[in-house]
Length: 414
Image 1 (cartoon, rainbow, N blue to C red):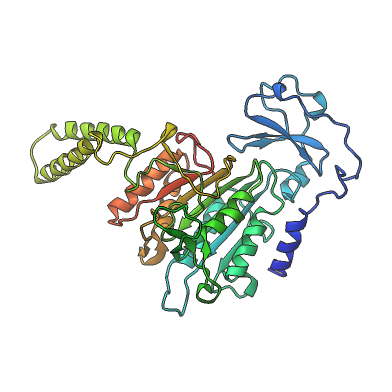
Image 2 (cartoon, helix red, strand yellow):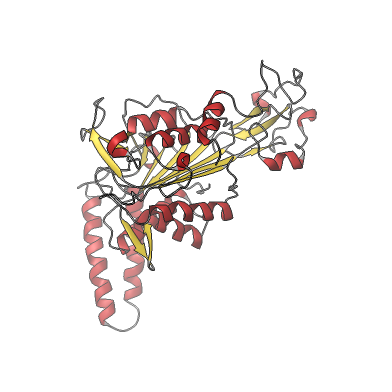
């Protein structure tokens, strides 16, 4: 990618295509169109101004959905707003011309060092193929950047400087309705907490390929670059396949884990119902050694379940199954951010292989799950990822963190 860092720095100052001096529209004329009154739109919908088309488009603040025509039920929306943008221009997805998707994919193998990993570069390219084929992400360099330590372009090597430039590029020019995707596969570390908001006394970190000389990127800074800098109405989904990653972005909410990452009350009840169903199935038919093995497993799981329901180690969660975090960086502003990480802060994430091909355990589990079904709720996806780790004998427990309390029964989308 030619001049990548230069493009990043210019993009930070002014989104491509945005008019200067307060002008609206491609012809530079001030718009006379008035926005619809809030009570003319269904709950959760807002009108946003499109610079290039000189008209309003509509965004659902809860789901991130955007559209050019007024949402159903808006009733009083002015008739002149009910038109579509030119199809040819809309399909180009240039900044300022309607909803855009952008992705930054990072994979670091630390090749040739004593910290070498094997599957992280594969993770980046496997995710690239999957989201471009299934979720509509363009692979052109205006919408997707892949950073790996085997990149020929020095600007695309995942050094500390380039990673920070990449974060800026991902968010630069974003507007309500845009969807951003960030993946990181590599080493995660921990350093001494400097601001006293970590009970463990340690901040979580990302490790650039040059971390031994340039240092690690701490969670406080990741929050500043990726969370606080995210414009309102923009959706950011992060996949963090690294050690110590549960609260790596210092988001205000984590979904239902207690300090040990155990299931929350609702999950426990659902699991209990599943055990009852399995036990009933065992009573049908004749005796076998395999049924005896299953019976022992069900008995042990039931014992653990009973312990949890008695209150021993029961997770402390708030309404909706979320635990509210108390990081100093949190500013009580809700943001549409979703982070799926490979493990708790005190755990490591596996760099392993499946079918003879190296991969991070989280990335492989995620892709395997979504290839089977892309019609999953957040709760179902998290349960599937944790189930994969358990059946594969990995000790890591994937975590879900959010910038707002998202309904766990809402669909997972990218």
